Length: 103
Image (cartoon, rainbow, N blue to C red; front, side):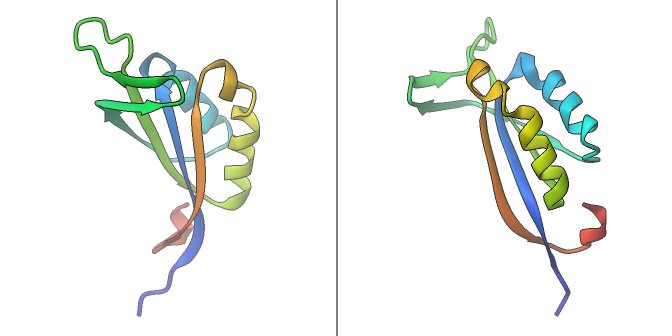
């Protein structure tokens, strides 16, 4: 069986215009890789939303990354002040990864 190690999976639901700011924080804490996944629609405490192809006003994406516990904690600390002011949804979960030295 292939050996795995535990890392943190971090997901940040964010309005598209804020993606560069989020990525700058990811780089600041030295997380080397991330993916941006476009989200078509959703719903939450403030109701439903759907991407508007004309204006892009409600466009959201999920920024996804894997990191070790220390870097995940650093990113969480850096993002904490933005959670309310920018309506971010931040989740951190344990995952098992192969080739853990990459994260």
